[in-house]
Length: 71
Image 1 (tube, rainbow, N blue to C red):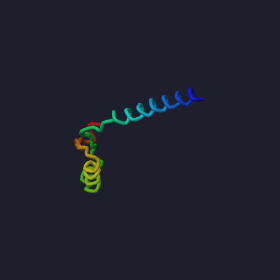
Image 2: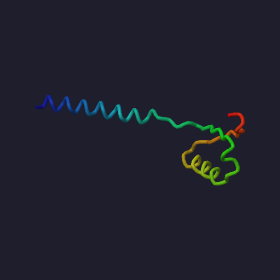
Image 3: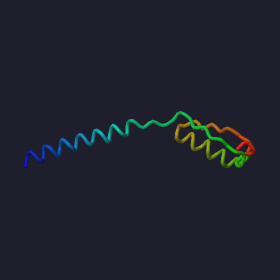
Image 4: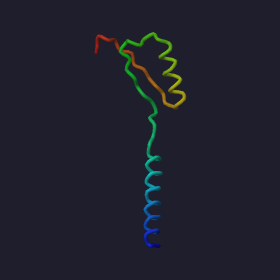
């Protein structure tokens, strides 16, 4: 019974380290680049939501304007 308990604890510790290490390896990007095809141009609500989301998450969001004729 002791042997089973020791093996179980070792596996539990190894699994715990793997889960902890997996969470540490995730990194968020420095910035996101979005291509606006003109359908949202001039909408201040969308622009304000984009800026607010970027500030809350600490990610710079850059928008590239592009005419619809080029798509």
